[in-house]
Length: 417
Image (cartoon, rainbow, N blue to C red; front, side):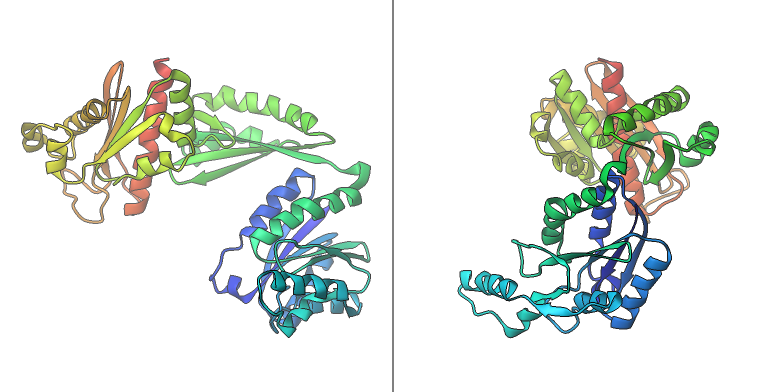
């Protein structure tokens, strides 16, 4: 099936809110074999919304999911737009009026009269109930196109999809439905262009499964997606392709699917029954934030020291004054003593440290912006590496440094198991 997602709302076009609904729906539709071919955003304008529906139909979409525009105000036009486009009437549902009224009564309020607009149902449409709000959804089919009208708030839209829309789509697909399965390979230390060179023939010869590289700050992901009658069959199609890619660039693959750098580091530490700490200068606690964003990270992360000032490096971490005078805070020698100090002070098995110049100022010919030293202190000793990022702003350099520090920790954990 060919699907298009049409988000309705001027606030989306103005950038006041992000269109997270389209991302969510695309992911969920792929799980049941419905391919999304286009995302469209249109403002609260009747004529432009009707044209968007016509465009979707002309492009061959047989599933159109509209989100937003089901509220009680004058600019909530989705019901009227779809009714006009399919040539059907809108009729007041007393049942929905009473449901909306009870929604307000429960809260000790009187229902505003304009909420009756939300009880208007397109002739012949199936009502999609919304126990989390006052905007019911609708489903109808016209000329081979299946239309779904869903509320805009994600807290209402997502449950409606999961509890009602998905079942309808599966019913419509019938026995011919295919299941899509994906596997993400996470790569660090190999740029997108270099990675593509090594697997170019695999990408060029793709069919089912498909191969798609994605670059993000400091790392690359490869998405392998297959379609088959069952999820197990789809994964079976992916396996030989994944094996072939691993034979080429396996040493750069650190994780799969949701195994981000922070997740992978946590998995390895928990498996070893070990703990770690951080000593951060230019990253200002970013590594600690990445780790503590994960539930349960207290099992392996003891804490960190943000040693931005040299006095903190000396007084808390024990960096020697002689080292700072001879080599400076941005040096391999300082990074080593920072990592060793964090490991000692916080009583952990491992520690990582980062010290560098994130810019935009503070650099020199000898130590330019983007120069970063990363040290890892562990049971087998302390290692340190110099990195020089010549391009990127302060935010990019800090994020690259934080990710590289976690990757360095992962490498040590894997090599010393």
